[in-house]
Image 1 (cartoon, rainbow, N blue to C red):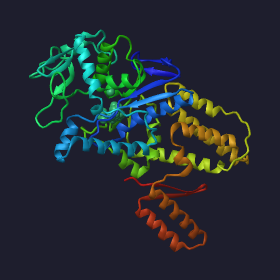
Image 2: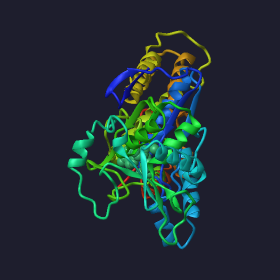
Image 3: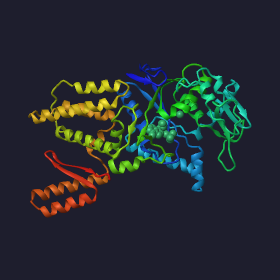
Image 4: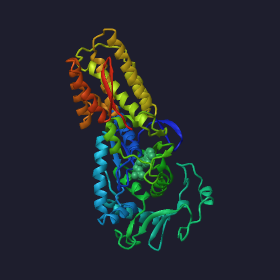
Length: 455
Ligand code: AMP
Ligand code: ZN
């Protein structure tokens, strides 16, 4: 498999440290709110990577952290007059609701900052001993000048970075690029004891500790959104490579941003759509399919039209599968579709091209059926293989399990029965009901097609 490695800015053949067990580390969310569609992108994309590597025979250890202490969590807890852990636990539960809905396989480990304080304090102590970190009045900073190659991931030059840096007010840092490893608690904030102050870790240090603890000295693939490349991942590299010589992670993968009107979807820009709200309208599976519809490194614009296109695409696949699902006889055929699907994923996880292979198979099957061929089990096997690998087979097999969709399907059956019985009044009445539910219908040769009118 070829992977575009952010470190080299090139596609490289993937060679694991140890072919018996691959370690993947994905930076997880700060848990103070529901996740939005942009947050969902890395989890869906790297889940698909994991499924593909498993298919290739690798045993994968998949680690994703939760940042369960941070200013935003504390602020939310204060606003609700509750403990920060209540907030963190609540939004971890809500995270799983969405991520399970999106059919993201559970990670092997979900380490949480507040449960890893000891390891974090140990690493900070070691970095101080090695001269890579210093304590100023209870705050510990990492000295970015203590490592060679600071900036090697984001391709930034430390001197240029610093000459362009804004002059920070009241900073105790020795250099503008230095960053916080440990900070003292303000009054009424939660804290943990340490040799420097009662306080809590800075953000970057947790991932350095957790990745090594749960994966080993060298992480095979370290992943996250491209907005994390600098400073978060750059700082992880600095910390971990100051701890031990050699590569911290061999391959860095970054997904492109999900945009709204060409602007990054984010909580702070207040232009976000929550995963669960979108799922209510379109279904989780449609959202997953939408997120995989372009290559993971490309930006992806969020729009109702594109989600509708994803819904229609899945529906087309589903209609095709329905016509062959009873096939029992296996006739060999040129299965170029499965091969091109695998080729696409081997090429830096190109899910867009992989999905094209699915549609080519669908087209092939529809033509064959129209020409009078009987359903072939080999087609069904190929289709299911591809859908399973992308994690969208449940929907295609069973239909959406959301209640509205079930109700709509039932009403459509009733309307068709009414039409067959020439009971036009009843048929119109049912159509009216569906319209008020926001459903748009179209009668086609293959039956009644429908979608939500999202306006
Ligand atoms: P956060 O909770 O903000 O740290 O984000 C969790 C994950 O979502 C990280 O991997 C981010 O890179 C990713 N992410 C945040 N916003 C977007 C976006 N608009 N598009 C794609 N990924 C995003
Ligand atoms: Zn991280």
